[in-house]
Length: 292
Image 1 (cartoon, rainbow, N blue to C red):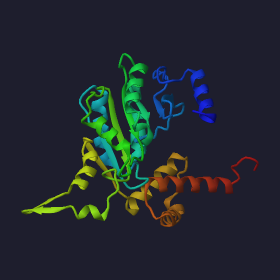
Image 2: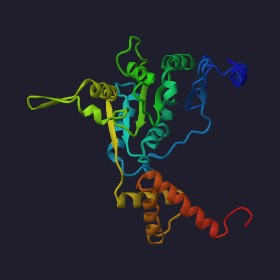
Image 3: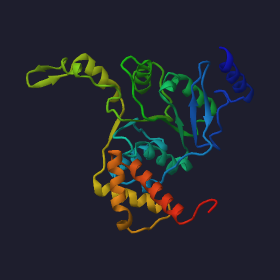
Image 4: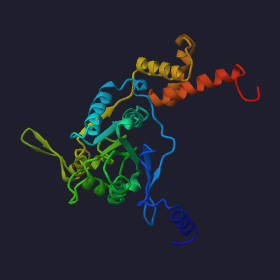
């Protein structure tokens, strides 16, 4: 340890924010795991992004399934880890954060971690045990935009957490992950050469089996797909409403469609970005800005 790393470690130690202390989950409904070479720690999230469940359109089936699963979990009943996979900007991360908004009054808390933090899973679970010694809260470990390289060591660490490790996971901890890849690992044409036929059955080879083995340890697979044009326009209208605009669709429809064509995507994210552009540019043109 040298230079900048030492100074960070020293400041971290002086603040007393190590994993043994952790955030106060009575005051903080969310935390993130900060991975460090000398040992990570939990850090409270002061301003959590909590979308409204009712504002998430076009994903009704996935929303209903994950809502029921989360309700079971918060009630102390058996529930499943969930993998939310599919197109970019289709509402996967927003749905998980919206569930925190709906259930945090009932004891749900969220801990965000990235791929590097997966290697710290034993430390994360130990830190949660110290931060919540009476197990009053239910924790969702949230891995956003998760994917692995073929030789990524975090891959096996996550498999162990989900199913197969010697140490039992606490009953008040569940994992929700989002990914653009259904099986979290890249697929290659060479993988297809390992498939063989057994009678009328197609048997995958060892490489394909290994790549499927992680994703199948999630009890729930929820697919998110690109929206059609009418769904996209409904979502644009909802985001405009949330920004305080009730403009008739005839005023913005064509521009919203051009916006999606320029980005090559009709997604909730693109709809939100257009709504912010449209409302902001109209307000600026009308003189509703600082210094006008």
